[in-house]
Length: 99
Image (cartoon, rainbow, N blue to C red):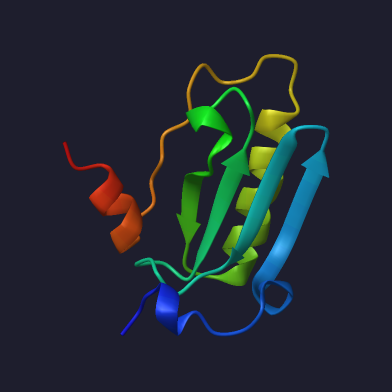
């Protein structure tokens, strides 16, 4: 069973890379509550009331590292995206999207 309760390892063991500057956090790590093995999440006051937005999912650690770098570049550019789409497939995220 894949889920939050079965999340194996500490955050430090699951972390691929984390970028923090000011109020921006771009975090990429291994997960077990999704249909992919890795995800990048963004926390920023401009989006989702500063709650996490999962912006990309990946199959491999290498893809996750490349994706992380892409999102750091996007989020540190002069013009931030107007909105971020949450692509999480975790059960908790899917439930929270119900009307």
